[in-house]
Image 1: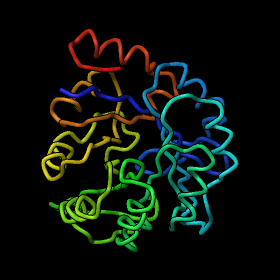
Image 2: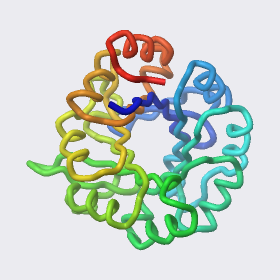
Image 3: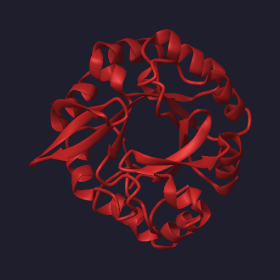
Length: 250
């Protein structure tokens, strides 16, 4: 079994960290630089920064904030939000990001995935996928979960894999912020459709949920926000518990 990763997520709105439930009811959590530094010191394996309103507001990610965070941490750093072309990726990598996360722009122009992997390498191109159950099917949503693309999730997983993506960040909108556990059945189905590493997101509420997503969900990494932001769990404790239970963690 490969080493599993624990990744805190900073959802950014107006330069501040926010968190909600099912992508709604956003609450201000705090300063992103302070939180990023805290999580790096807590033993986080990576950090994800998502400027969640950049696409809907038709603007670019806060590059200066990305640079400030990058200078404050010493762990891999993924940045997403408002990225639509190679110049955007170059600016973020130059500012200190290690990887970039593409979501709505990839849905609008799938060929962008191939262009970015060709220019920068697949290892730094993460495809973020927000999905919600509609009747009996998992459907891909865009624009921070506000737009139903009517794309079937399995089809989009296959396409992003074929186009050369390096990793998938999979978020269940239905589970987001609920603290009721990850969508393990969904995550397992997705991991069976691709050879790409899967970062599971949405639903972490206790230490057992992290263990479950690695076994029942077959995820490669677990991303969480609420449980860490509000102090329900500490990253160092989650990793210690997983280690004691026999899970390979860094």
